[in-house]
Amino acid sequence: MTFPSNAPLRAPGFKGATTQSLYIPMRDGVHLAVDLSLPRGQTAVDPLRVPALFAATRYWRAQQLRAPFAWFLSLPDSARDFFCAFGYAVLRIDMRGTGASEGDQPHPWPASDLTDLYDLAEWVTHQSWSNGKVAAFGNSYQATTAEMLGACGHPAVTAALVRFNEYDVFKDIAFPGGVPNEFILRKWADFNRALDANQLPRHMSTLEKLLVSGVKPVDGPIPAHHNQQVDSALKHVVFRDDIDPELGVTIDQISIHNRPTAHFIDHWGSWFDAATADAVICRFANNPRPQRAVIGAWNHGATQQIGMQKNPFPLLAQMQESLRIFDQPPLTRELHYFTINENRWKTTQEWPPDGLTSTRLYFQPQNGLGAALPVNPSSDHFTVDYSASTGLNNRWQTELDQRPVKYTAQKNLLAYGSVPFGKDVEITGYPVVNLCVKSTRNDGVFFVYLEAVDEQENIQYLTEGMLRAVHRKISNEPSPYKQFVPYHTFKRKDAQPLVPGEVTEMTFGLNPISALLPRGWRLRVSISGADKHTFLQIPDSGTTAIEIFLGGENASYLEVPIK
Image (cartoon, rainbow, N blue to C red):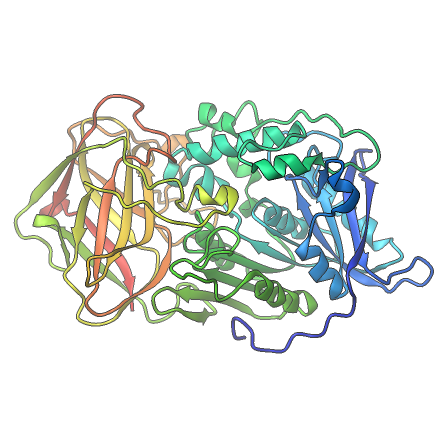
C-alpha cells in the first residue's frame, strides 16, 4: 500500500449535515451529551442506513455562541461536514463529567469511559439510521477515547483513526525519562479546570472570548462537575507505581498500553510531537492485528510540516486518506514513515526496518565524536545551568495547543561533534546514549539533544532524550510491552540515587527519528541538566557540578542506527 495513496477517492454522496443535540442514558442512569449529525437527506420515514463515527472528548463537543452572534452564525466543523458528505453519521460526545454531560471524572480516561463507549455503541445499533457499524476518530485526548472504543468489547466496532496520542502516559508525556513535565501537567490541569467550570481557558483569544459563552447545552443548565486534575501528580508521583491519592490510580492504570484494542487501527504520530512517534512504534510492535501506522515530520495535529514553509500533505488530504481506511480497513500491517531532508515516505512491515546497523560513536577530547575509543582516559566538567531552555515551542509544549514546533538554540552546552560525513548517511530509529558521569548531588536530570550540522554550520534539531538519575537502573525483568531502548522500570523498588563523587553509568534511549544527513554534514550531541520552561528542576535548589568521562573503562558514547 502506497502512502499517501494515489488511488482516486469516491465521490461524496451528500451535501452537508443535519445536527441535533440529545442526552443518551448510560447503564447507571448518567446522561451523556451528544451532537448527532446525519448526512443531509436522511429522513425518519425512509432512512438510509449508515455507519457511525464517534468523536468523544473532554474538551466540549461543541461551543455555544453568545447573542447576538448565535442568531446568524454557526461554528464550522470540517470533520463533521466531510464525513457526513461521504455517508457517515458523526456523534460528537462530551465524555462523562465533562462539557454538558452529567457525572464526574475522577481522572483522565477512567474505566467508566469503557462502559460508556460500549453503551453508546449499543445505542447506535438500535437506531433506524444505523447499519450496525461503529468507528471513531480523533486527535490527542479524543484519539485515546477512539482507541478505547476498540477496547470496550462491543462487536459493532470496526476501526479507529488515532492521531497524536500517548501509548504509555507515564513515559510518553507526564514523566518522560522519569522527569516531571511540569509545563504540561500544570497547563493541562488549568485548561481543564476552566472547561469544567464552563469557562474559556485563559490562553484563548479575545475574539473567542467575545464570541463564545461556554459549552453548547442540550436542554437546560450545564451540569456542575467535580473533577480531579493531573497536576496533583507533581506532588505525589515520582515512580511509575506511585498511586496519586487525589486521582486514586497510578498513571499506568490510565494508559492505553493496558487497554489493547480489538479492531483495525489507523494510528498517526510525528518525530517532533512529544513522544507520539514512539507511541506509534510501540503500538505497532505490540498489537498483532491488521493496522496502518504513520509517522510524519509534523507538529501536534499535522498542520505544520517541520522544515517546510508549506505543508505538502494538508488536513483535507489527510482526512481523505483516513476515509479510505474507514471505507475498507485493509488486512495488512504496515508502518509508513517520513525521512526528513530526504523528504521521502518509506514503508516497513516490521520495526526496526531492514538495513540498519547500530554504530557506536565515542565522546572524544576537544569535543569530538567518533568511532575510535579514546586511548587516554579524560573528562569534561560543567556546572548545570538551570536557566537553560529549549524555548516555548518545543515538542512537549506544542502538544497542548498545536502551535508550530520551533526549537530555541541553546548556548554554552557541553557538545560533542563528528567530522563531516564522506557520504550520505540515514539515521532511522532510536539513538541510545551511555554517559559515564560523576555528580556532586544524589539526583538530577540529564538531557541529551541530537543535532545535525550542515556545511554552513546551521544546526538542525533531530531528537532528544532525558533521564532522571534516580531511575537509572536498567532492569533485567521483562518489560510490560516490547520496547526498543534500554528498559527502565521507573518503579520505586528500582530507585538508585546517585552517590556524590562516585562514577556512575547512565544509559537511556532518545526519541526515534528518521533523517538523512547529506555528505559534508556532521552529527552533534549536546548535554544539559535542565529545560527551565518545560521540566521540573531537580534538585530544586543549590549548585550541581557534573563530570563526563571519556575513554577507557568509563567511556561515554552514542549508539546510532545508521544505513
